[in-house]
Length: 458
Image 1 (cartoon, rainbow, N blue to C red):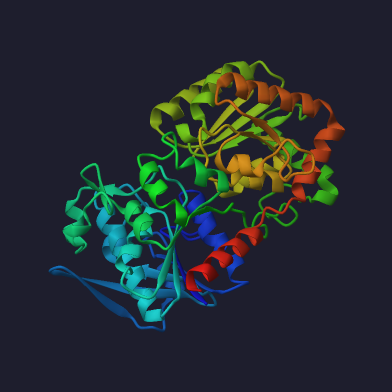
Image 2 (cartoon, helix red, strand yellow; image 1 turned 135 degrees about the horizontal axis):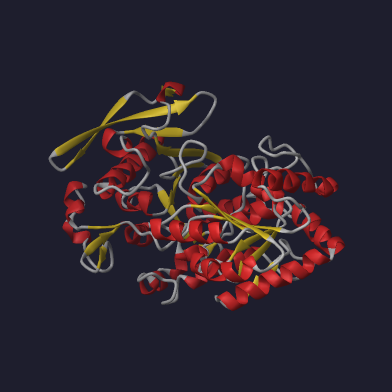
């Protein structure tokens, strides 16, 4: 079985969030059970000198309406990942946020469809709205498509004029296909024409069928629910391995979890904190409502009075960053670090005692899995993939602190429960050891996807 795995971003080449991580890790796990070929754009910020043209050929042409577009296919030596280069798609400073994003990723979807036919693959695995139109472009072919929805809040909604540029017949601009309140919805096309739809956790698959989490597509998804299933994500446990992670001050493992303390001591020294006896709580993520940033901001005054250090690493809207910076300056034990740095994030996971993750909704979440891997106990709101991966029960992986109500009061209560746990050093250490031994890899996910692939081609 040959599978083409298409994603708009793929770590370590391009990444804006969890999609990039999953697009890297899942194909690695699937490689053990099938022939899988990842494909992603070759953006201008990626060094093209490291790539060679693919053996299929050099320059291809793609005719859409009255226009002809050229694209090239590249490959890294000793890697099966393919990179598509087209100037409209790739000559940008960032991944997304441009007026022509509809054309850019419509082109990418069309190119993926053409490459799938040239390579005679059995299945194309699509990821989010950026590749969803591929299902429409392949609807008359024998090639099957599966669409994974990583976050329904992002659907690729554009002015209907983009359909003409992409040579998509106006007959598809209906409520049963692409039309969404007078605009074109790329993700909707993927839902309509893919043979299977997955989400990144079982609970999220149920949540998106509700008005609260359906983002306007709950009715449409309910109509197609027979195709829908939830498969929990994992992480690359070779990449995220505290025993061999070179970014850490000191390496450690579940067998020697006591060595983890050296990381906190070193980080506290850099931070200017004199005593390392206080627990370290961290938040790593985008400063958006989905991640619970309003609950965090509302809780900072109360947290400043607790015997803890709280470090936030992330970026978002300017007003949110400004507010967190002001509160960080005001309270001595609250620290806001603007931006994102991969090495620093790993150092924080290794140093932390607890990860705070009070998401309003979370399709899956990877941070709680990374935290567990690095011996930081997750504190999570019971939603989506967090509800599927973090548990209070002693024998379930991952063990952590879970709160049901999305509120400042519930969040603070959970933090105070964590402080009580920290007071019992033996119990806290035992929980960290347990979590570090949990299987948070993509192994189980790969088996579930392989089962789905077989069903599609049976």
